[in-house]
Image: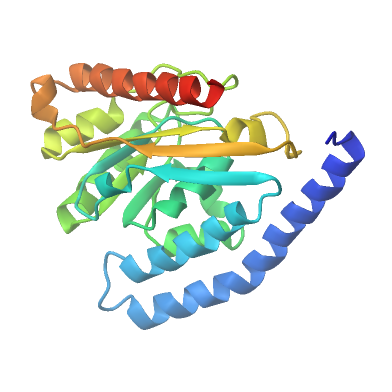
Length: 252
């Protein structure tokens, strides 16, 4: 079935409108959870679980779309560094579907968005201003603190979304963090989200789409000799190989 621009516009407006309205009544629930747990749940474990449900239910509502997870046994609530390729804004909603504990590293500007950003503040997620050395240092310090407290952290090593779905260069920050902290890296591979919501614009594509998420086995920094650059290369290769394999299976 073909969808013209008018239908795409209408569906997109309804979807984004629902997100805006639902955030207005879901945030008070998040605030209530925070008020009842902040004094004993420093890691914000229960607030994050609610945030997973809040975010992932939008992914459930995408029209003509299925989401398939593989390798969930590799997910853990241990203090690890999660990394994923980045194709779309939709990635964040999909990855909340892990329903495991972690702290997002996100652009500082997102923390100012009403309701969503306020919830990120309550969750103690980590801010980052791209290209700002002071902010990068503060981000690394905050991530180390969360790992020491027993929380995992989640970063997109490409730094920004890929326009064509192919892997961009990986930045070393996540892998330097893992190497210095002596914690494992858990790579996650996403494909299909760029078809739902391309990088440019906010119109949703209504064609039948399958989103696949594959959680790869954890990588110990020792496998790369504890060297952040070697660890970066190793993890990128594993994500790239898995992405190619997933696309080959989908095309068969």
